[in-house]
Image (cartoon, rainbow, N blue to C red; front, top):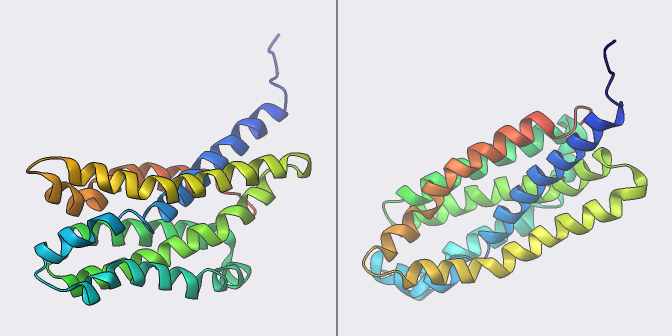
Length: 201
């Protein structure tokens, strides 16, 4: 006689997978808002530019988030939350890889803005996906954990950026290649989110 697994088991597993996928994506989105800040003096030397120009590496990302974050909710109402969220991961991954390959500061600024479009999609839709995946009695826990990922990303950004810069000789190479190298992890997040982020959204 076969044993039938309880019907809630798959649902329990699925909601945690969705939380992990969303949490990792919003962590990266918030991390990239602050990780470059401590590297601005180094980037000035590398790209042979001035502070008034290099500050746009940070500003392009933050302005993109500010302009697009709210509108992503409306876009998701039109074409679906899952589609917007996964598209955001793809754009963020593409922007991260291109930042590591930027030939000059102006390309870097443009690629950072591309990153911000993807990050706005991820940050804007992450909470909505969680509220549809988790039962109403546990939504507070899911939203709180997701907010923790965002806060951790904001705090960890300068720490990770400073740690990379502290490495001798290869510091600048690692800093510029960080987005490209982390793209390998983004492939994991993309697969996880695409497979699990709400079948109804």
